[in-house]
Structure formats: structure tokens, C-alpha cells
Image (cartoon, rainbow, N blue to C red):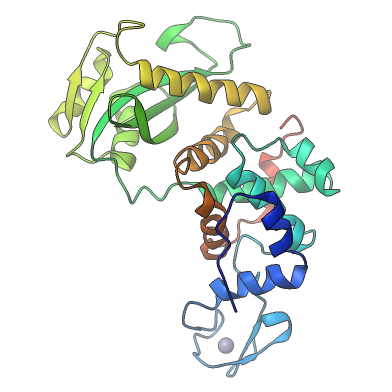
Length: 302
Ligand SMILES: [Zn+2]
């Protein structure tokens, strides 16, 4: 009988996922939860295929459990993939692809490619906009580069961040979006993707936010270190620390993936037990990402 794995205990995880077959059954359960429709011809009837796959009764197209998902063409066994998913979703910081490669006896490039796919699955759909008390601010990433500091800094990656507060001292959810600059148009991308017009938003006095007041309820406040924006500043410091600590030199083209990974875990801090199971489901529902696309992004330093 199928039971969803909802726990953060590594020992329980090891006991549950003790073979590739168990992992395959787990994936098949989610893959086959949708009504069957042949990917090639749209026919709705199938024969059971090898390894829990399905074969179209009309065109005989054989679809494996992992085909057309982010597990497509997986280079190592499923059990290792499940362990990586467990680490990336339930540990507080996860690890770099270098460490992951050593732990699971795969090459660093293979680890990196798979983890990049996982980050795609972790990316927010933007369907559940923040509606409560929010704060928005920005950060610059890539501290080693010389140049001006503050919003005018060149050659640094720019990120817009929003948090939704919970009570006076808690943070319910957080999203971060890589932006090209601090213009209204670019900041507006964060708002339209993650913030509802109903939300009550506080920002600092940056002029880029002003035109957004036509659509959003924004209160501007002078930023006074130690006095206000403490929560969002703390969230930003933690995010920056994580980026620096685990992924020494995250270049621009990779940055959004790391931001998505960080926010995925952050937003599940109070429901860690379901983080793994929901990540598996996202991996199964997500179309494959062509290797060519990821190869272009591959970077040894991460
Ligand atoms: Zn078919």
C-alpha cells in the first residue's frame, strides 16, 4: 500500500526508500495519478509497460515513469536521486554539488546538472501571492567585486526581496527575484509575480517604488537601521550568507535557481515534513529541461 513519506528523519527515510523499486513505485503513484493520455497521439488507453511504464494501445509509444518529467534521462539510480531531493528539501542549508557528488559517488557535473533540475522544480509558480503585511527591499550579490556600493553599484547582481510578516517578529513567506536594475519596471516584476494588490506593503523611500503605488498599497518609510525593516534585513543577511557560504561564486545566470532553492526551503520551515513529498510531485509534474540548456549554464565553481 502506498503511504506518502512525510517526515524529516533520515533514519526513517533510509528505512522507507531502501531500494530503487520502492522509489520507482513512489514516482509511478504520482505519475499515474493523472488520467492517461498518450504523449504522441493523444489516445487514452494503454497496456502496462516495463518498469511501471505504459504503452499506448494505438501507436504503441512506450512511456517510462520518468519520461517527460525532471527525472528524464537520469544518469544514476533513483535511490540516489531521492536522497538528493531529501537533502535539498529538508536540511536547513543543503550542500554544494561538490559535496553532494562525494556523498553519492557521482561526478560533480552530474550532481550539478541534477540539482539544477531540482531548482527548476523548486521555483515558485507565483500562484499564491502574498496578501498580508509585507516588506520589500533589495540586495546586491557578489561582494568581491569592486565598485560603488548601494543601488548604483555596477557589476553586482541585483535581487528584489519580499517577505510576508507573521505577527510582530515572524516571517511567513519570502520570495526573491533577480532583477536587471532597480527601476520601477524591474521592481514591478516582483510585485506582479508575488504580491497581491490587497497586501499592505512597506518599502523604503527609493523613488522606484513610487509609481507602483497606483496599483499597490505601499507605505514608504525612511530606513533607519536597528529601528525598522529589521525582519527583512535579517532575512536578506541570512540569504546572502547562504549564497556566500555554500556557493562561493554564484554567477548571474545561475542566481535565480539558488534564490528559488533558498525560498523553497524557507517557505516550508514550518512544514518540513511534507517538503520532500511535495518536491517529488513537482519533479514529476515538471516537463524535462533539455540537457543542452543546462550544459550552457554549467559552471565548475558551483
Ligand atoms: Zn499513442
